[in-house]
Length: 164
Image 1 (cartoon, rainbow, N blue to C red):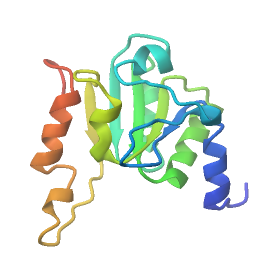
Image 2 (cartoon, rainbow, N blue to C red; image 1 turned 90 degrees about the horizontal axis):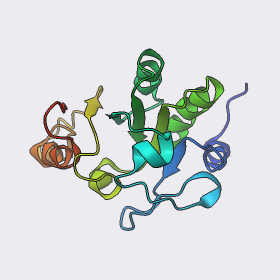
Image 3 (cartoon, helix red, strand yellow; image 1 turned 120 degrees about the horizontal axis):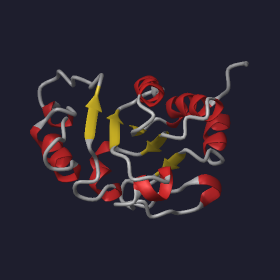
Image 4 (cartoon, rainbow, N blue to C red; image 1 turned 30 degrees about the vertical axis):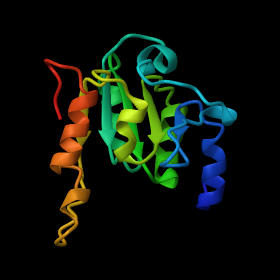
C-alpha cells in the first residue's frame, strides 16, 4: 500500500471500531467510531472488550507493536495502547482489525489525562516500553517515570497484583 498522509489516516481512525480519541486536553470526552461519545471510564473490559478480563495498558505505544504482540500471545487478557500521535496508532489499529485481535484497542490522548478515562483500580498492568527521557534540565517532570506520573498510575492501577 502506498504511503498515506496524516489526514487520510486521521479520517480512517474515525471509522475504526478499536480506536478512541480525545481531541481536547481540557475536555475529557472520548470520540469513538463514527463520532460516538462512549463513556468507558470504569467499563473498558465490559463495554469495549465485552468481557471481564484484566486490562493491560501500554503507554506511548507508538505503532502498537507491543500491544499487538501481547494481544496475540495472551488472548485471555485485554490490551490498550495509548499514544498522542494518531498517525502512529493508525498502523497498530489497522493490523489489529486485519488480524481480528478483538483483545487489542487503542486510545489517542495525552497520558496526563489517564485518570479521566480510567476508574481507580481499573488497570491491571501498565507497560512503558520506550519512555522519552527528556534529559534537559527543567524537563524532568515530563518523563513518564517522574513522581507525578507514577502517582497518576497508582490511582488507576488495581491494588495487589498490579505493576508498572
